[in-house]
Image (cartoon, rainbow, N blue to C red):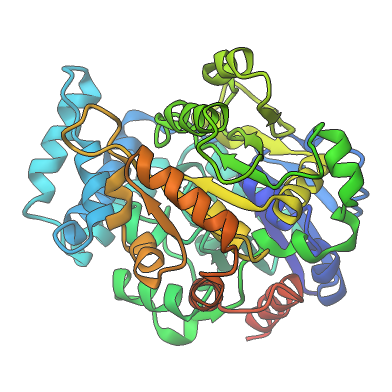
Amino acid sequence: MKILGVVITDGVGFRNFILSDFIKEAEEKFETIVILSCLPKTAYENLNINCKIIELDVFEENFITWVFRKTKEVAHLQLFAKDFFGINDNFEAAKIKNKSNRGIVTNLIIKWTSIFKSEKWIQCYDLLQQKSFSNNKITKDYLVLLKDEKITSLFFTHQRPPFIAPLIYASKKLKIISTTFIFSWDNLASKGRMAGNFDKYLVWSDLMKSELLYFYKKIQPNAVNVVGAPQFEPYILDRYKVEKDDFFAEFELDSEKPTICYSCGDISTSKNDTLYIETIANAIINKKLVMDVNLFVRTSPAEEPTRLMYLAKNYPFIKWNYPKWFQTRADHQEAWSQRIPTVQDVKDLRSILTYSDLSINICSTMSLDFMLFDKPVINTVFGNANNGLLNDQRFLKFAHYEKVVQSGAVAIAKNEIELIDSINFSLQNPNQRLQSQKDILAIQIGKPLEDTSRRIAEALLAIDNR
């Protein structure tokens, strides 16, 4: 029997692989599907999921495990920091100035890995990390679980969370083939090391495949399959479609005006959101735009919108979408990962993309989302190293986003004048960047949205048959 274990690590993986058609497609290919969930089992209620769902016990690293994992990650960052701005940015962020035990050890790790950072050393750190948790109760429970469920293939929907490392270890011990999906377009050229070594890899595009082979020299090309990006698949599924009149009524928007959608990030990378929203709002008040518009703001699903509430009070004409995600657990080492979306939020997001006329954001994946709907995109980056704002201009140098900027698919606004000019130009010339957008989408996503889940399920079955 072919029994697929699907590891759901977080809310985005939940959206990509539970709220898409993936489970349905996988059930047609495998005799049995078992969902191994790092989210509470209650998250799946009312979704008509017919396969078995097992809520995994939460693995928490002890200090020794953390040391080896941190050493592995920092060595990876140091190995590539010189040539990749985004990786160097994350490496600089890893430096800790406080005198806590972890701060002191982190700085010692940085010194050590400045010399001992080769792929061979990274694999050594990985083995030491595995040894440190091999006798952990949860690791042993995972071994028993995989045996009892007779899993023949294990699919990890995210490659990076540290709490999946014992499950990767258990799959290796039991010789169960492990496959991971590279979670996002910025994960390889900007972020840290994967949680472990997998047998097979699924990626968005040929570009992502080339990045994976560059950063992980031990991976062979035949271990990587290009399948597309499941996070966008709900945009072509009929069950998430909302009629235009219903959308405008739900959010009390004027259907006679074009709609500008500003998409927030979380405060760690998007602290300047409030400045950008106020700049647009004041431009509307002072009649600096070429036409009357709706200003619509979608806040980040990764955080509560508390920091933005004064804007709602001071600018009552702004309409708001607070993503309908809910926190399933608070006492988790990565609490943000325990926020999950509702079906209604997927509908809301699709309707926002469909019926908005212009997207403004800080170099986020939302740029791709709006491009898929042929909408012009402006990236606001007022902050630099010298003006006291969060330096969001640095994101333009990240490898994944540098390609977007160079393609001409987006307008870049580094100050208020550029932002207002870009808004006016985009409102009057909405299709000016359309071909550049289609070109960058073909590079970044690589496959049509149609049948994404089917391609992934077929790839997993082919892997299990080997």
